[in-house]
Length: 129
Picture 1: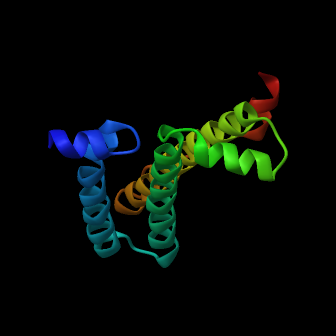
Picture 2: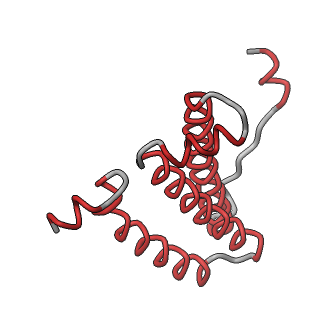
């Protein structure tokens, strides 16, 4: 493992936890595609897993030496630090959107199992705050 550690071009936590996250993603897909009641929720689950995968890939690129981002920044004629900031913001947004999508899927599944539970948003209350 020590030799692989030295050869890995990005963050070392990805080398250790990446396969674990990939296995968990496959399990989540397998389990939820069997349990979710509608095609819409299944597609949303797949989209959330895809967003996590893309965020992982962006994090991998961010952890590499700055050559890939420097090349992209020169093509776009922008400062590398701005591209790094945009990349980090995009990666975090993807993670938050994926997590929110999972929350929505699980709440929809919960409401299908327990019809007595409902979620309501009163627009009038939102404008008073």
